[in-house]
Image 1 (cartoon, rainbow, N blue to C red):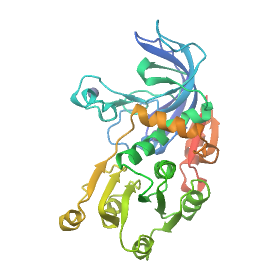
Image 2: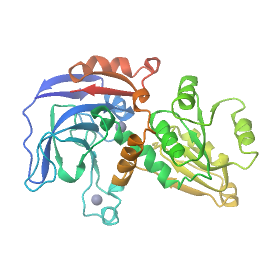
Image 3: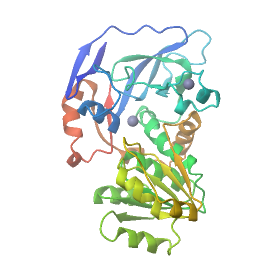
Image 4: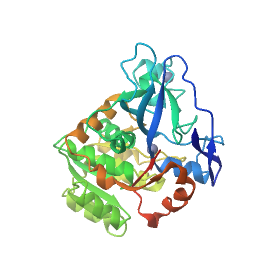
Length: 336
Ligand SMILES: [Zn+2]
Ligand SMILES: [Zn+2]
């Protein structure tokens, strides 16, 4: 079978590999679509902290069942999406149902080889039949679920005024699911094109250009109260530190971003507000299910989010083109 392998930072190659044989309890998935995300560009650029090369990337996956274990409810030919978080099932986190934060989690395409290939073996519990969504949409469920999880962590409700800081794909996903819960949503970013997209396609109530005068504008939006929920999706430590100041009294701050840095805040300001700080990592099966529900309800503009596409075999050239900010990629999809 064909696979695209990242041999070392900056070098992708199409290689021929033996088709994998499923172990007991594994499904052989014929991969059909692979979403490309910031993590993949980080791996390609050699910026991912814990990664061994060579690596087959690809964790945003949809396909069809090629072979299922005996007694499985999955049948050959059935369209599926893959939950790429391989949890150990034995640690304290797994015991609490927190498979998204398993103490020894392995993510397909990051810690072990992923789905930029024609076939992939996946534990049966990580393969979910999908109805009412196309293969393209099914490959977009994972990144959307990360946003949905952050919104759920923040306990966002219809009465909340929400500020999403950072309008990359994950921030966009957070905007979609905060709007789906009926919240009033403001989006802030440094890029005018992404702010325009957030208003036009994601139903954000308003947007704020980050930079001079942004704090005054945010104060004005809530008449000085601050936001009930602030969701950070910037990947930028100074933006993450700054976000504490935008919280209302009783507010909740959700960090979707992860950075290799310390995040500090003023305790008097934090305490005065009786604020809550929440990390949000990966997603849980119920978040994936929520994404599918909202897709079926027509609340996720998947057609607009999928800005770029190409064939798996062309991935080496496409990666170079897609990672340039001028390319305007929101979500790129590889067809296998
Ligand atoms: Zn991703
Ligand atoms: Zn575990």
